[in-house]
Length: 66
Image (cartoon, rainbow, N blue to C red):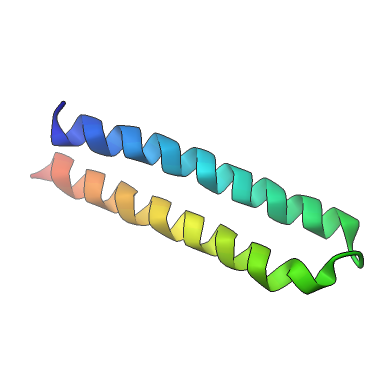
């Protein structure tokens, strides 16, 4: 498998993870004020997931441009 294909597969997994994190954050917001104590933990997970996804997308873009 080429580097580009590997990155695309990794991006697909990270995208699913980010989407799930977004839904977890959304679900938490719907239930507020119940479980308000979890806001920071859930938000950090969503932030991390989207950060990882953006980094891999940038890596792919750089690899494709090379």
